Image (cartoon, rainbow, N blue to C red; front, side, top):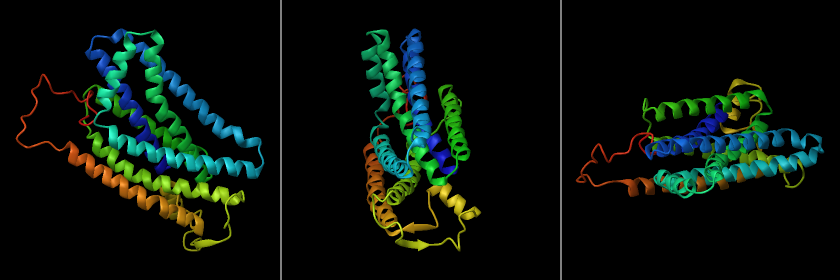
Length: 295
């Protein structure tokens, strides 16, 4: 549940931040009459994401066990890949996100009405589809239904609340640090989802070694116990893992964590400013709602 809360919070805050930036820019440029188009696009993105989640949940139910495991394993690996791409994308573009969105709005504002609807839908839809897929994959690892959904729902609700507070200037969050820290945790979560996908493909006989266990700690960590439940809920760790699962986990987490931490360090150095540079005046400084870095 905690892992799904983190997913909902992280992905939800990305989507909410984009909406906040779009609203702030249209308001600042005296184009509030265009806000309903953004809201319509967000509504389309939410509807598509919910439909995608429903398709993932109920679509494979009539298939054979092997087919379900193949689909589940493949989508779990895809989910891990998408989340990996997402955290690297945010680490790279977080400092230019506001400017990129403003350019998209300026291009679409003078065009047809559906232009801004598409901007809102695409800006939020990516996070929505990623969230639906990753939550579905994470829920399968716990063999539960309502707890992962509850955790993700609470995370999204928290993200919406933070977005409202950010937009009103009530709170300030260093989003660069938030995304950096949660990115590290999501790498670990994604590694667990990847190994679960590998296990599904092993059960479907697509990959070998289903009976070749690397370790079995079921006696020390009963699957129904509190410790095993927490480890599985947060990191998708299971007491018994095959050799291939462990290999996949190591081959993923070592290079991905290395390159992600290096990307964070590079971004920090690139964003460093000379101490002698004068501070921006009040008139030129961005408001918290306008800057993802200082929100």
